[in-house]
Image (cartoon, rainbow, N blue to C red):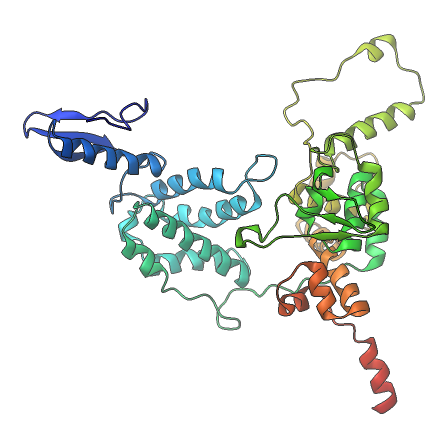
Length: 427
């Protein structure tokens, strides 16, 4: 009888256990007995056991003796291939899982999966509360941990009773826990945007303006390619290759009007598969500007020098949401320098400046920056507020790509000027 899995080089061997006369195979460090050696039934059982082992990423069979660390390793092997960005890197959701699993591994990495129950998960949640994570983030991260055990149950890595028990732990309720409440995200004040833009490169200035005009998410703007644009009509259609709700089967189409088209045109390139907004291109422009601004001509040896090819961190081919946000934070710090004595002196290095500040001054500097920094997700709220004010809630819902108007109210601040006008007359 043929063995469909026997030809796979990495599959474990079908062996004869002489003391018992049975066939045996070792998967996940455990011996699995298959029945009388050499019989068709034992070979069929071998194919089934090894098939399950390969399907779970060579992590073995379901066992209450598996540790939490082993379950997490198995899930992470799955996550690295499941949560992918268009450029082949792990996506943001994979980063969210990485963050969620750290508190779990810190407390229970060596704990047997069969011993992990609702009280243990509650202990992990209490640790998140002590870390000052906000309530909504804690609930999402606990949900991700539950999903890990759900995936492990489906792949027979842990008994089904473990996930069933964890599912009974309810989320934290507003005002009924010690977890801090997240402040609602507000639109960026326009003077802050105007002051910050000159300190961003051309590529990121374009991304900021594109978000303000269209209301797209930061990640959608960062991954824009010529191949994703339909420019046949007066209003262009942008279909992101990857977006937040695609796993729900929802299509995402973003309308690009004439003003936004003018923002995009300077970055269109013949290579349609390339990302429009590239850190590598921004750095090349910066170096070209530095050469143009030189006060003295380059020496022959400098002219002949070739760029280093062994850089530890070469510029990426596109911005991520994290790098985009960090660039805005740095631009805000440049646009709003702190007053003396918190400001860095001209002759000081960064290390000397940080060493000079006292603990209290470090706190004052942090508060100064916090009050003047903004992040790219707020720009979507700017656009949503404008859409709702000028065209109504239903239009804002469509333009922002929401399936529910209730979600749109989170992104669109109510414009209360009309209410003020009415009350001025009747109140």
